[in-house]
Image: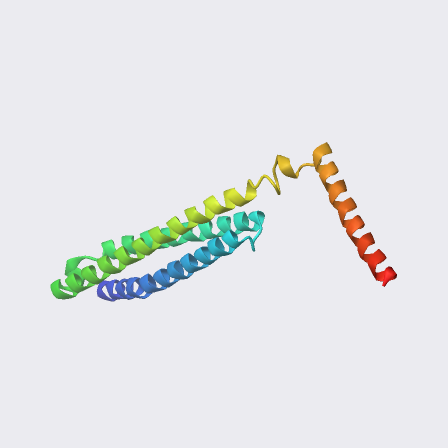
Length: 164
């Protein structure tokens, strides 16, 4: 395969892969923001948020690696291989696309950090996982009082129904 065809294949691959990476970054960012909104509402457990956070962070790092690989491939294309005009057009398009993907990737990492803060807050919830959730004499007493009050309320309702 002649060198010009190799360079043309490399340019084609870079031009084809950059939009794919950008779509993945934007989709993952939307997913992470949705998880953050769901976690704020309390619909998702803290442990599940941590699991999703780990997956999102791993995927974001893979996308960053793919982006740097594409930037390296674009940098390997030389002016004399494409010609002056085609090289200038390729470099300006690639530089702009890589900058857009890098900005989107930074937004993804910001969203991942927000999700991390939320997951840490949810996992450190004292009422569910911390000391307040641990059984103790006070917690047992409060639970017993709630049970007795509920029993008393039900007994009063039963007495009213039988008296009628």
